[in-house]
Image (cartoon, rainbow, N blue to C red; front, side, top):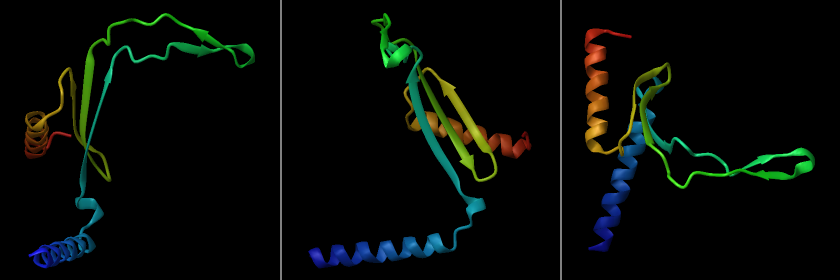
Length: 107
């Protein structure tokens, strides 16, 4: 039983590697997602002589911004940002926007 699982996994690995060999760099689109809070600041600063200056810091985390983009070797294909947690619905929206923009040939 375990041997069959290993053989299937090895077969899938070989198929994946073969597909990568035939893949053109121009056909790749990479998705990247990031997020931050608007008040992400350090509570200190540099001072003369390597000393640090302590700064007051807000107790609230502030608004959260999420950024997601589709990037090819030549350009940013699509990008969205807003106050949300990125999930599958946001990803689907990004892909739909990119599809319609390419359909309309808006660049």
